[in-house]
Amino acid sequence: MLPISITRSETLKQKPTDESKLGFGRIFTDHMFLMDYELGRGWHDARIVPYANFSLDPATTVFHYGQAIFEGTKCYRRADGGLQLFRPQDNLARMSRSAARMGMPELDEETALEGLRKLVELDQDWVPHQDGTSLYIRPTMIATDVMLGVHAAHHYLFYIILDPVGSYYKDGLKPVGIYVEDEYVRAVRGGTGFTKCAGNYAASILAGAIAEQKGFSQVLWLDGVEQKYVEEVGSMNMMFAYGNKIVTPALNGSILPGITRQSVLTLAGQLGYETVETKLAIADVFADVKSGKLTEAFGTGTAAVISPVGELCWKGENLVIGDGKIGPVAQKLYDTLTGIQYGRVEDKNHWVLKLT
Ligand code: COI
Image 1 (cartoon, rainbow, N blue to C red):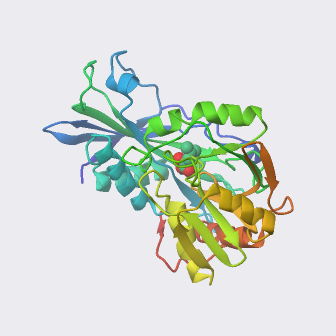
Image 2: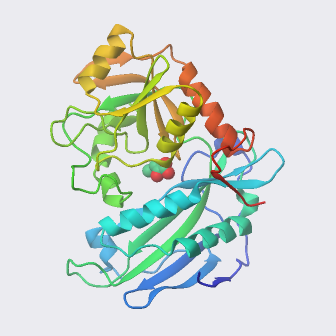
Image 3: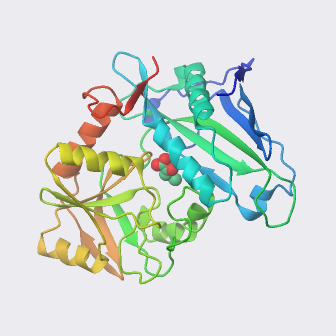
C-alpha cells in the first residue's frame, strides 16, 4: 500500500443546514483524495488535499476519447453517531474490471480503500444525520495524457470526492414513472455495458431528456440487438415481483453488475423469496402486469437504493403498477437493506465496514 499524505484545507466550507434539501450530486466536501499513475511506474503520490479545480490541458485524452470510469458507494451514520461503509471493496474491485475493459490500469485497490477511509474520516462532519441521508462517495479514474492519437494513455488520475446526499429521486420512496426506450440503445454485447464508464451515461442522456419531457423520471433500456429484453435503467438495475418471486434480468455483459442488485438478491433469498435471474421480455412484463401476475416493479442502485416503479410506458401504452405506494416486497427489502447500511439490522453477510 502506498503512503498517503494529508494536506488540510485552511478554510472550511459551510455545511448544509437543512438536511431535508440535500438532493443528489450538488454539494462537495472540504477535501478529495488523488493518486497518479504512469506506465512503467505504477500508482504513486497518493494524497488527500483540499477540494479544488483541476488544471488540465485542452488536449488531455479524457476530453476527446472518454477514457473515464467511476464508482458510487456511500458512508452511513448509525443511530449511535458512528460511521460505516457498505461493501466499498466490491466497488473498487468493479472499478478494476471497468478499467481492464477500457484499456486503463488496474486500480491499486488497497491504497484506494485506505484513501477512501482516511478521506471520509477527515470530512466526517459532512456525513448527514437525518434518516435516508448519507455521504455519497464518487471514486473516478480519467486518462490524463496530453495527445490526440487514439491510444491507451500512459498517465491516469484516480480521485475520490464526497457528496452529502438525500434521495436520488426528488419524491423519495414515491413510485417513479419509467419510459421504456424502443429507439435508442444503451449498450451491446461485447461493448462496455457492464462497466461504469462515462460513455455509457453519455449515451443515455438524450433518451433521458426525451423521457423527462414526456413526464417520466428515467429510461428503461432494452437489449441492443432485438430491443425485446429488459436490461437496466442506467442509474439502477430492475427487479419485478411476482408475489413472493423476484425476477431480474440475468447479467449478460451489457448490464451493470450492481452491488445493490447482488445484495438485494442475497437478502431476498435469506428472507425466503424465490429469486430468478433470466432473460426477461418486455412484452411478457406488460402481459404480466395486465394479468395481475406481476405485482411490483422496483429498481436497485447505490444512489437509488430501492426505488419503486409505479408506471411503465412502452410504445405509447402506459401501465400502472401497484397503488401509487411502495409495495410490500420492495418495502421489506428496503427496510432490510437500509437497516444493515444504517446499523439497525444485523449484518449477517459481513458487508459493513465500520469506520468509527
Ligand atoms: C450509483 O448508484 O452510484 C450510480 O452511479 C448511479 C448514478 C447516479 C449514475
